[in-house]
Image: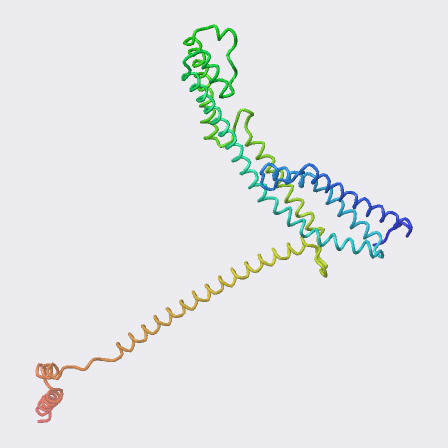
Length: 335
């Protein structure tokens, strides 16, 4: 590859591109790692944030790889650039594989996040119902205003106000039980909805649709980045990129499948022709056997031949009478 730049300019530009590539790699690492600290590997929401951060900032690492390859192309005689390009090319194979593995990780994390959200809502609703039951038990079991006040303090409920304390116990109980019944009627549908929907919907709105959109975005970005890094990846001692090797492998598999299919079709056609020839040979042999049976007459019964001979005069006797009659007709003519 020829350039119009002078050698010093090419060296300066190649060094600048290599330094920029290194800086972009550092920015990529910080953009991915810092928001995810501290790591919570078993938390599905942390896993979703991890896949989103990688796919969102993956273009920085891809741009760094591109700049490093361009720097090595500008200054091919620099061994440190060539060695760094080979190192990055070898690492790109694993980076491409990592982006492909993000797809099942995103799906699993999304499923677990929905499950966790539904379980959290169900627990919250159950705790609300338990709290209401404790409050009702504290009100019903009180036999005086002072006892009611003590029961409310025991369950850490709000105490009675000065005006409530001046009322009769029955009126206070009726008012509190009515409020508890309203709260229970509001809490039971929420608990049933949380248990049935399993976190797909809630008071904050539908969470399923945003999660599906984010999952689709991560999947598409992961595929694109995986193929991009595969194009930049190169095995040691190979003149082809990893994507080119993948393409050759897929083409080889397709050609092998087509050749096996063609061989199977040819084998079936050959078997069909052999079967057809065998059937024609059997038919020909059957015709020959029938012709031989027609050519061979079966032997006649001697009794039948004797009866036929007695029913008509012998040829020799008929001839002798004929000639005698002819001789008698000639004799008067001669006299």
